[in-house]
Length: 399
Image (cartoon, rainbow, N blue to C red; front, side):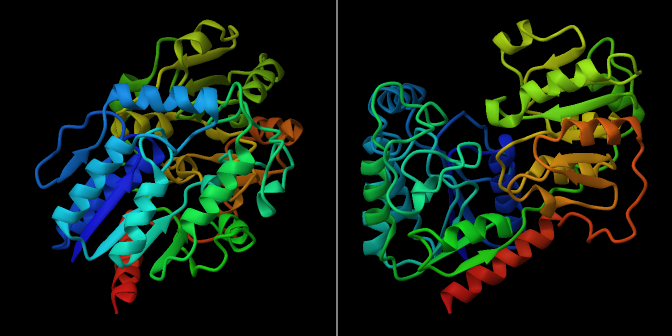
């Protein structure tokens, strides 16, 4: 089977790691995979077929058009042309889309071609962007305008931020027109939470399948003590720190809640360690919080999960957080807000508390380690199980 995978990034971040693991497993199973991505240069490993489209300059131009004109997904025609030529040359049996936003594609040109080619298409949604007029999430704004057409957007400043123009009504109409009417499209969501939203959107006419994300348990497993110590910054001891991880610490990720929690537990041995901070955030950290920049090493991240007293996910908007699964696979206690599909990631040593309930978080932190729950669901889905489900889906859309 020939499978074309498309995503904004490859090998880094949650969606990039998902695509990399999927492509690797499919290739090892005897399939022919080509991964097309838009941001960050990646040197292919043995057996990998990768194509980066566009350039850093084009990503910056797309970002500028978004900031000024609210035109996310409406530029980058040259990069989109590269994708279409690669698609024609590769001639896949199945086209598997992931994130098509991220400043690298013109979605109308892409979907015009997808409509013409008649190939079966699997589209994994990792957030709500495809059926809104602007945002990737809307829970914090308590907004349901995405059901009827958007406009007067309350989250214009949220990703993908627009500083001058509110184009949400126009964008919603263009996305609805572009994404509708494909005869062989199946939508996949990692969570029941997102699947329910899809069914209430203009994408609700398509069949929707839930395939929870898996993790590579060959990498995300309890790591040796020497790896844990090597990954930790000075001043942090294994077994004592509370860990938070994000690709970008946007407001929805709950950074201020971590700061508030650090003040509450200042008299305890617990320390907070946050991964993925930018330079400005590192400079602004309170003295009670340790921080490091984003790591591209999955092994180093697994070591940080292994050594923590608990992994905390204090996010206010989320789909199906892979970090919860990765931490659980490394043997960590997980304390998460119940936003989005977070509660669907729980395992024996995990707890979900109401979103924003720092009292509940503090109580669980002071009670660590968490006792195992007898009613816990199955352990997080292994990546190979996830790939097997996708293979069955590919075969069904081809039949």
